[in-house]
Image (cartoon, rainbow, N blue to C red; front, side, top):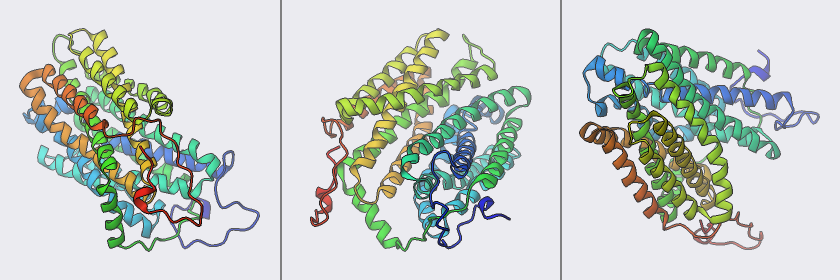
Length: 433
């Protein structure tokens, strides 16, 4: 098999002087990297939230309350959150592309297998194992891009990868909504699993071999020390908590909105409810706007603004008016993605050392927010209806505003590197985010 079609990570060998070691924009290798990571991101996030649209049907089929049915989503995001740091460490030794390849194929096969679960408990177990498998992509994809793509082209490559994530999350929900209308939840999961398997094959065929991967010698003790240093930083702790809070609010709305829209007075078909997730595209624009707002006003004001927008969107969904519900969802989605973008970017500015581990901790907190927010939101929705779900979102956004007060009020600036002869203490080398 030609080396360019191999997704393994052999020991790096010197490249010929006529061939660049990193993929640049416009090159064949760069296009293949982008297509491969787009396919992997699409399949990963289509599978991660595959059962979210199906929650009302799972409740009816297995006689479950909304909070219990939501476990089919929350165990997957929770398992991913717990696995992302260990898997990232495995990739340091075993190779990025090997880990990603195993991840996307194992997750796709588990997704198909979940469709044949004889009962809800088995479905939950399979979805939890699938969450561990899915951790391989978010744990390693950005490290692979940073190693294999040249710096001037890296931003565009990262952007396309993130686009694959968001389109996959949206596309998976659209597919399950349509397929469940045609044949029920089992057909829906098979459809998403087969779609993910096709994307995994495309990823494996397209991904170029690693040229710059070098196995890391970081020990478990060293990794533990880096993680502890991040968790000891009060600003990073606030940023991790903000990611968790925003995701808990977002997950509450999208987990239980289907129950409301399928019932009176809306009584929408499942296909239409699934199509509601096209609203995710609002996050693409708000994420970019959030970056500009951070540059002008700083992270604290941006996060306050994002929390206020998210809360406003939740309030707009209260009346039994479909147009207002749709507008409210657009506003809420824009606010959530703006907050997520601001918090995650601040992590990279704050952590001057061990940035990969700092980002992994943020991802873990972010997905734990989805895992915890699902059942808690289900309890609120089951007890007080949609009003209870909205009240929970308002409480969470108020908490986000309080947590954000500990961040700098000044616009974030990329810190200038210290002269080589100066050895600054780690604690003083941080940004003022």
